[in-house]
Image (tube, rainbow, N blue to C red; front, side, top):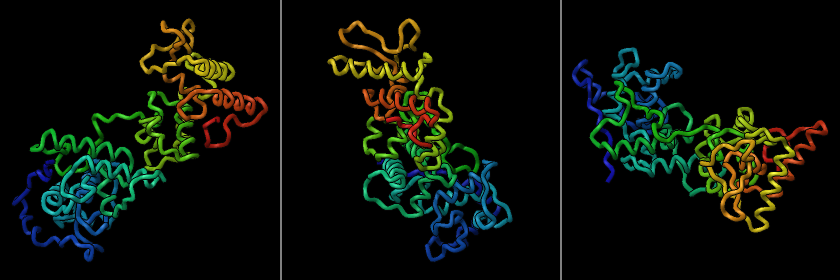
Length: 357
């Protein structure tokens, strides 16, 4: 059974006679939601998210609260918002802990899963028919920045891991009154790397463009990092704005390889791969393959009969359709883009759309 994590000590009990507050703070009910002391986010229930907002205000200079929120955050009513307010709110009045999305009194992997479902739902991805209240959505906001994105999911999962590994220790950062969940130490992402090859290229933009076109429910099976990395601006939505940012920051665009090949050469490589596969041969895509050189070329013969090897980055640069497989359609897409540009037109099918076929 996963332990509950309300383990933070009441550091300042008796220091300023604030025990009086135990009887004076309003009960957290929806009926009292209008100006509820401690209800910083205004959702009608005092939760760990309210404490997280106070903490973020105290420890992040770029984060601010409105005058109304500051009034609700001043738990001790001394005219200022301090760590003492966060400590007392967290230790005494949270009905639900930050991250307890399913409201079962525990932090588990299910909470991270629910956060992921919500993100997928609001992006039009088919997912379980589940509705999340405002309170539950706020409890997903692990960093207290008001945006629910994949980073929150990662933080919740790691937070759960900390609780399980050390159930008797404070799982937060340790700073007085700091109760928002800090960035993950283990779930490292390259934001924008939708295809997971560790390099931002046009292919990442094409993968997202294709998803936006067809809403392919298997996109994360083809490209497992998609949901974790395709939200380039981390606004919680997967849009053409993210694809534009991927393209603008691409190390390589379509019509290039890491060896500097041009568009025609790329189309020829795609045709060669298609021909090998149709003839019964194999093209092995290897993420650990050494970077190609002028001597080895992009597509290399191996010691096995009819087996060729190519590194993941260059294979992706030939996958002009963004569907995960290089074939004759990719060659046609690359040639069509070249023709459009040569005629004075736009290289890509349209502005904000980067899948070439």
